[in-house]
Image (cartoon, rainbow, N blue to C red):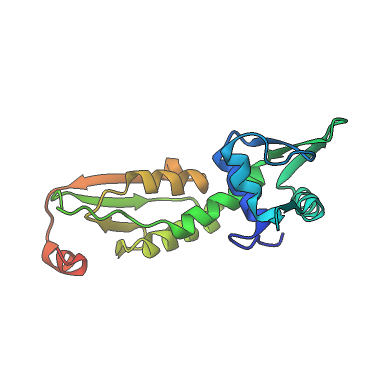
Length: 189
């Protein structure tokens, strides 16, 4: 399956479907009628105040061929677009790639130790999770042990849910540990 280019028109459709209820009904007679979310999702299909219906339909059909959306067309010229699980995953993968930890102005003096024991059956997910932790600038202590001084619970929960490995990951909260200075230096705290 080809990757959808980020911020392309088809990606915008998926993104707004994922942000909303997952279902979008658009009248081809009056495409901008309805919510602001619909308007934002299809604004790139307007050129010189004309709706480029053919481009919109082609992009929807391409998304449908890729198994990312389901499309139903009614007799009254309305199209119902419903995002599928693969479409949500495509949008979520971009969120994971862009994710950054929020660094608080003042450190709460708590370390977050992430430990995982992910079975070999989940090797790809384990490797991807390890790479995400590196990208989030966690300090790598051992193969399956990382640490950060910053709150990361929401990010870890999102990533582990996305890869379906939540049951294999633990977060420990630590006040102090041996050789802490080395890691404090790494994080410049």
